[in-house]
Length: 249
Image (cartoon, rainbow, N blue to C red; front, side, top):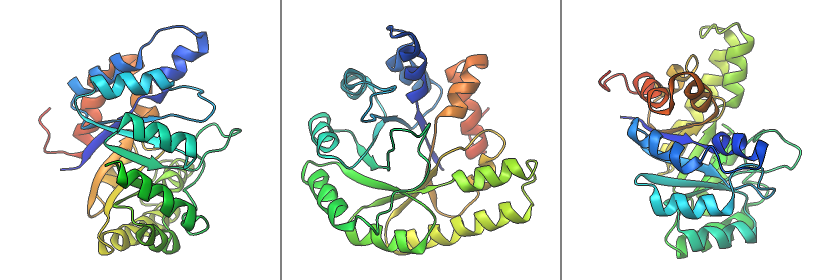
Protein backbone atom coordinates (compact mmCIF):
# COMPACT_ATOMS: atom_id res chain seq x y z
CA UNK A 1 0.00 0.00 0.00
CA UNK A 2 1.31 3.44 -0.93
CA UNK A 3 1.93 5.72 2.03
CA UNK A 4 0.84 9.37 2.03
CA UNK A 5 3.01 12.14 3.42
CA UNK A 6 1.01 15.36 3.85
CA UNK A 7 2.90 18.62 3.41
CA UNK A 8 1.43 21.25 5.73
CA UNK A 9 3.63 24.20 4.69
CA UNK A 10 0.73 26.22 3.34
CA UNK A 11 -1.15 26.14 6.61
CA UNK A 12 1.83 28.12 7.88
CA UNK A 13 1.65 30.31 4.76
CA UNK A 14 -1.84 31.44 5.81
CA UNK A 15 -0.61 32.17 9.32
CA UNK A 16 2.41 34.12 8.14
CA UNK A 17 0.24 36.25 5.83
CA UNK A 18 -1.10 37.92 8.98
CA UNK A 19 2.02 37.41 11.13
CA UNK A 20 -0.15 35.86 13.83
CA UNK A 21 -0.50 32.53 15.64
CA UNK A 22 -3.23 30.85 13.61
CA UNK A 23 -3.83 28.55 11.88
CA UNK A 24 -1.37 26.37 13.77
CA UNK A 25 0.55 23.85 11.61
CA UNK A 26 0.64 21.47 14.57
CA UNK A 27 -3.16 21.36 14.59
CA UNK A 28 -3.04 20.66 10.86
CA UNK A 29 -0.62 17.79 11.46
CA UNK A 30 -2.91 16.28 14.11
CA UNK A 31 -5.93 16.54 11.81
CA UNK A 32 -3.96 15.00 8.95
CA UNK A 33 -2.96 12.08 11.16
CA UNK A 34 -6.57 11.57 12.21
CA UNK A 35 -7.48 11.47 8.52
CA UNK A 36 -4.97 8.69 7.91
CA UNK A 37 -1.75 10.47 6.91
CA UNK A 38 1.27 8.19 7.17
CA UNK A 39 3.67 11.08 7.49
CA UNK A 40 3.97 14.85 7.81
CA UNK A 41 6.24 16.85 5.51
CA UNK A 42 7.49 20.36 6.18
CA UNK A 43 9.98 22.54 4.34
CA UNK A 44 12.04 24.86 6.53
CA UNK A 45 13.15 27.35 3.90
CA UNK A 46 16.13 29.63 4.40
CA UNK A 47 13.87 32.69 4.14
CA UNK A 48 11.36 31.20 6.64
CA UNK A 49 8.44 32.19 4.40
CA UNK A 50 6.09 29.67 5.99
CA UNK A 51 7.35 27.01 8.43
CA UNK A 52 9.34 28.51 11.33
CA UNK A 53 12.02 26.96 13.53
CA UNK A 54 9.61 26.67 16.46
CA UNK A 55 7.17 24.76 14.25
CA UNK A 56 9.82 22.17 13.47
CA UNK A 57 10.59 21.65 17.15
CA UNK A 58 6.91 21.35 18.11
CA UNK A 59 6.08 19.01 15.24
CA UNK A 60 8.97 16.74 16.16
CA UNK A 61 7.70 16.58 19.73
CA UNK A 62 4.01 16.12 18.88
CA UNK A 63 3.85 14.26 15.57
CA UNK A 64 3.08 10.55 15.98
CA UNK A 65 3.84 9.58 12.39
CA UNK A 66 6.92 9.95 10.20
CA UNK A 67 8.29 13.49 10.07
CA UNK A 68 9.99 14.42 6.79
CA UNK A 69 12.00 17.67 6.81
CA UNK A 70 12.58 19.18 3.38
CA UNK A 71 15.69 21.34 3.39
CA UNK A 72 18.45 22.90 1.35
CA UNK A 73 21.86 21.26 1.72
CA UNK A 74 23.33 24.14 3.74
CA UNK A 75 25.35 24.00 6.92
CA UNK A 76 22.56 25.81 8.79
CA UNK A 77 19.90 23.34 7.73
CA UNK A 78 22.06 20.30 8.37
CA UNK A 79 22.76 21.57 11.89
CA UNK A 80 19.03 22.09 12.51
CA UNK A 81 18.22 18.60 11.21
CA UNK A 82 20.88 17.01 13.40
CA UNK A 83 19.45 18.81 16.43
CA UNK A 84 15.76 18.12 15.72
CA UNK A 85 16.21 14.54 14.47
CA UNK A 86 13.41 14.19 11.89
CA UNK A 87 12.77 10.68 10.60
CA UNK A 88 13.88 11.74 7.13
CA UNK A 89 15.61 14.79 5.66
CA UNK A 90 14.88 15.41 1.99
CA UNK A 91 17.42 17.54 0.18
CA UNK A 92 15.82 19.94 -2.29
CA UNK A 93 16.97 22.87 -4.43
CA UNK A 94 15.94 26.27 -3.15
CA UNK A 95 15.71 29.70 -4.76
CA UNK A 96 14.67 32.90 -3.00
CA UNK A 97 12.60 34.12 -5.97
CA UNK A 98 10.71 30.89 -6.67
CA UNK A 99 7.10 30.49 -5.57
CA UNK A 100 7.68 26.79 -4.91
CA UNK A 101 10.38 24.27 -5.79
CA UNK A 102 10.82 24.54 -9.55
CA UNK A 103 12.91 21.48 -10.35
CA UNK A 104 14.85 18.58 -9.00
CA UNK A 105 18.14 18.80 -7.17
CA UNK A 106 21.14 18.58 -9.50
CA UNK A 107 22.86 15.80 -7.60
CA UNK A 108 25.30 15.07 -10.42
CA UNK A 109 26.66 18.63 -10.42
CA UNK A 110 27.03 18.84 -6.62
CA UNK A 111 27.84 15.23 -5.76
CA UNK A 112 30.86 15.92 -3.54
CA UNK A 113 29.06 18.45 -1.36
CA UNK A 114 25.90 16.35 -1.15
CA UNK A 115 27.82 13.21 -0.25
CA UNK A 116 29.25 15.07 2.74
CA UNK A 117 25.78 16.24 3.79
CA UNK A 118 24.32 12.74 3.45
CA UNK A 119 27.15 11.34 5.56
CA UNK A 120 26.58 13.97 8.28
CA UNK A 121 22.89 13.15 8.38
CA UNK A 122 23.60 9.41 8.51
CA UNK A 123 26.02 9.93 11.39
CA UNK A 124 23.17 11.66 13.23
CA UNK A 125 20.87 8.70 12.56
CA UNK A 126 18.75 10.54 9.96
CA UNK A 127 17.70 8.91 6.71
CA UNK A 128 18.48 11.18 3.76
CA UNK A 129 16.54 11.44 0.53
CA UNK A 130 16.92 13.59 -2.57
CA UNK A 131 14.29 15.25 -4.75
CA UNK A 132 15.35 14.68 -8.34
CA UNK A 133 14.14 14.97 -11.91
CA UNK A 134 13.40 11.73 -13.74
CA UNK A 135 16.82 11.51 -15.37
CA UNK A 136 19.21 8.57 -15.42
CA UNK A 137 22.18 10.82 -14.62
CA UNK A 138 20.53 12.04 -11.43
CA UNK A 139 19.52 8.54 -10.33
CA UNK A 140 23.09 7.30 -10.82
CA UNK A 141 24.49 10.26 -8.89
CA UNK A 142 22.02 9.73 -6.05
CA UNK A 143 23.09 6.11 -5.69
CA UNK A 144 26.75 7.14 -5.60
CA UNK A 145 26.35 9.70 -2.80
CA UNK A 146 24.74 7.10 -0.56
CA UNK A 147 21.11 8.12 -0.21
CA UNK A 148 18.56 5.42 0.52
CA UNK A 149 15.53 7.24 -0.90
CA UNK A 150 14.83 9.17 -4.11
CA UNK A 151 11.71 11.27 -4.63
CA UNK A 152 10.89 11.82 -8.29
CA UNK A 153 9.74 15.27 -9.31
CA UNK A 154 6.26 14.85 -10.79
CA UNK A 155 5.80 18.51 -11.72
CA UNK A 156 6.45 18.04 -15.48
CA UNK A 157 3.85 15.26 -15.57
CA UNK A 158 1.31 17.39 -13.66
CA UNK A 159 1.84 20.36 -15.97
CA UNK A 160 1.49 18.16 -19.08
CA UNK A 161 -1.70 16.70 -17.63
CA UNK A 162 -3.18 20.16 -17.05
CA UNK A 163 -2.10 21.54 -20.42
CA UNK A 164 -3.60 18.57 -22.24
CA UNK A 165 -7.04 19.40 -20.88
CA UNK A 166 -6.69 16.71 -18.19
CA UNK A 167 -6.51 14.01 -20.86
CA UNK A 168 -4.44 11.30 -19.20
CA UNK A 169 -4.10 9.48 -22.52
CA UNK A 170 -2.39 12.41 -24.25
CA UNK A 171 1.01 12.06 -25.91
CA UNK A 172 2.75 14.56 -23.64
CA UNK A 173 1.32 12.93 -20.51
CA UNK A 174 2.36 9.48 -21.71
CA UNK A 175 5.89 10.73 -22.37
CA UNK A 176 6.25 12.15 -18.86
CA UNK A 177 4.84 9.00 -17.31
CA UNK A 178 7.34 6.90 -19.25
CA UNK A 179 10.22 9.06 -17.98
CA UNK A 180 8.98 8.53 -14.43
CA UNK A 181 8.56 4.80 -14.98
CA UNK A 182 12.09 4.38 -16.33
CA UNK A 183 13.65 6.52 -13.60
CA UNK A 184 11.65 4.65 -10.97
CA UNK A 185 12.85 1.32 -12.27
CA UNK A 186 16.45 2.57 -12.14
CA UNK A 187 15.99 3.79 -8.55
CA UNK A 188 14.68 0.41 -7.42
CA UNK A 189 17.38 -1.42 -9.38
CA UNK A 190 19.98 0.63 -7.52
CA UNK A 191 18.51 -0.51 -4.20
CA UNK A 192 16.88 2.79 -3.25
CA UNK A 193 13.31 3.51 -2.17
CA UNK A 194 11.08 5.18 -4.74
CA UNK A 195 8.93 8.12 -3.64
CA UNK A 196 7.27 10.81 -5.76
CA UNK A 197 5.68 14.20 -5.39
CA UNK A 198 5.09 17.78 -6.55
CA UNK A 199 1.99 19.37 -8.11
CA UNK A 200 -0.06 16.21 -7.55
CA UNK A 201 -3.77 16.69 -6.94
CA UNK A 202 -7.07 14.82 -6.84
CA UNK A 203 -7.42 14.55 -10.62
CA UNK A 204 -3.88 13.67 -11.66
CA UNK A 205 -2.58 11.50 -8.83
CA UNK A 206 -4.03 8.16 -9.92
CA UNK A 207 -1.63 7.64 -12.83
CA UNK A 208 1.34 8.27 -10.55
CA UNK A 209 0.00 5.94 -7.85
CA UNK A 210 -0.29 3.24 -10.52
CA UNK A 211 3.43 3.33 -11.35
CA UNK A 212 5.37 0.25 -10.18
CA UNK A 213 7.19 0.28 -6.84
CA UNK A 214 6.02 3.67 -5.55
CA UNK A 215 6.38 3.59 -1.76
CA UNK A 216 5.35 7.11 -0.73
CA UNK A 217 3.64 10.13 -2.26
CA UNK A 218 4.19 13.54 -0.70
CA UNK A 219 1.34 15.96 -1.42
CA UNK A 220 0.63 19.33 0.14
CA UNK A 221 -0.98 22.22 -1.70
CA UNK A 222 -3.87 20.24 -3.14
CA UNK A 223 -4.74 18.70 0.23
CA UNK A 224 -4.57 22.03 2.08
CA UNK A 225 -6.69 23.60 -0.68
CA UNK A 226 -9.33 20.84 -0.40
CA UNK A 227 -9.25 21.16 3.39
CA UNK A 228 -10.50 24.75 3.12
CA UNK A 229 -13.82 23.30 1.94
CA UNK A 230 -14.09 19.87 3.55
CA UNK A 231 -11.65 19.95 6.46
CA UNK A 232 -8.19 18.41 6.77
CA UNK A 233 -9.33 14.96 7.92
CA UNK A 234 -11.68 14.48 4.99
CA UNK A 235 -9.20 15.95 2.50
CA UNK A 236 -6.61 13.41 3.61
CA UNK A 237 -9.14 10.55 3.56
CA UNK A 238 -10.11 11.43 -0.02
CA UNK A 239 -6.49 11.41 -1.16
CA UNK A 240 -5.80 8.13 0.64
CA UNK A 241 -8.72 6.52 -1.19
CA UNK A 242 -7.35 7.70 -4.53
CA UNK A 243 -3.80 6.44 -4.03
CA UNK A 244 -4.76 3.22 -2.23
CA UNK A 245 -8.16 2.05 -3.51
CA UNK A 246 -8.22 -0.75 -0.94
CA UNK A 247 -8.54 1.82 1.86
CA UNK A 248 -12.05 1.66 3.29
CA UNK A 249 -14.26 4.64 2.52
